[in-house]
Each structure stands twice: as structure tokens, then as C-alpha cells.
Length: 274
Image (tube, rainbow, N blue to C red; front, side, top):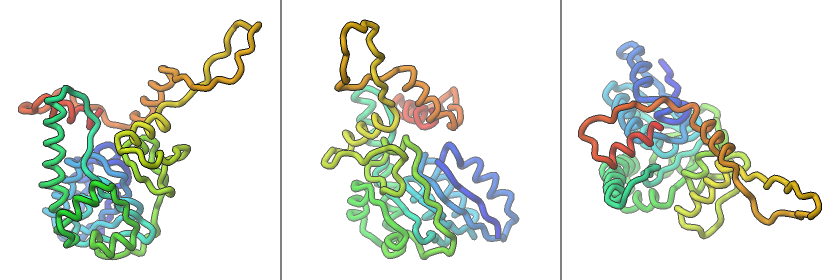
């Protein structure tokens, strides 16, 4: 039996292309276990990876740590799906980082709703037997499931005997996910303030995890005691360097967007790989 490891962010650390290459190296007829530990990533690549596994046949998915976001959708394509005791799954509404005018943003809302209604909801409902309305509520709530809940609700078929690998998420995920469990919360990032709407909590988490506060430089005039500062300033150079470090591992974006894309779709695609 062959084992393929999909550890990391889909579309950056692992990709549909690399998965296809590894899967193609396994002799026909040999069963494959795909070991997953992923915070999520590009839903379109996850869709392609799941389709590759299903088309080949004889592929089982095993969640060694977490299968969040797009990764939770991908694993549903295995002939069997298991999870380590102590592992976790997370499902949520599709989201993206984007810019544009009001017409372009409205188009993106339509795209995101289509992904939810035609891709995610049917797949989760088919696997679990939970009705579509309840699945949509779980997506809206950003639902985190431990290993026992994942089995009980039918997202996976059973527990594996592989020890769970649970590491804290990279800091950038504090501004992407809103209800990260304590065990997975990025180092140094406090929980978002209770009662904040999701958009506000993401903004708060982004500021806390990406934008480092720096104290104002001392005034040169030594004749006046400045005293304690009540606020903080942000050094643009330091922020820029922080962002460079965060995205240094991402693959370079293609310079040309596929023909036929609308402006909104093109911007979404570029931001996915930026």
C-alpha cells in the first residue's frame, strides 16, 4: 500500500499538479492512503485533487491532524475516510481576499454562493446524510469538529490508529478563520473580541497577527518629559517585511490570466496565487 502525504496549505505547500504526479507513480491496482494535515487553501485545487482520487479508485483518505476548509471537502472523495483520535475538521462558507468596485464584488458574491450551493453543500450532505439547510447553518457558523464529532456526524467513517498531529496554525489564519480552537490558535494571537461580527473580528485578528505595533521613537528634545504613550504607531517597512515573510513560501503567480475570465474572476484568481 502506498501513502501520499498532503501536509500543508492546498495550492501552496501541496497542489493538484504535485498530487497528480505522486498518484500517477503508484502502480495500477495498488491501494493508496492519502494522509492529510491541512488548514485548507484553494477550493478549486482541492476539488481537482478529490476528483483525481475518486477517478483512480482504491484511494482512502486519513486525517492525521486537521482537515479544515477546502481540505475537509477534498477528503470526502476517498473510498473511506478516517481521522486520528484528537484530530479535527472544520467547514465554513467559502471566502476570498479580493478588491474591486461594487459590480465586481456583487459578481464575486454570486461566485461564492455558487461554490457553496453547488459544490460544498451537496458533498457534505451526501456524505453525512444531514439535510442541506442544516449543512448551510454549519457553514455559516464556521463549525469545528473534534474526531468523535466527525465520526458521529458522518463526515468520516471511523478513527484511525495514527497519532494525531496538532500544531498551531500560521499567524495569517487568525485573520481568515474566526473560531479557531485554543489548541490551534497561532502563537501570540489573542482570541477575537466576543460579540464582534465576522468581518470586524477578521480585521482585529489581522491587525494583531500581521501588523506589529512599535513604540514611537523618543523625542530628541530632552528638556521635556514625554511620558508614557497611550497609543501605538505602525512602521510601514516592518509591516511590509512581515507580509513578505508570510507569503514567501507561495508559488509565483501566472503572469497571464486564462481568457474568458471576467474582471472579478481574474482578480480573484490572481489573489489566490499572489
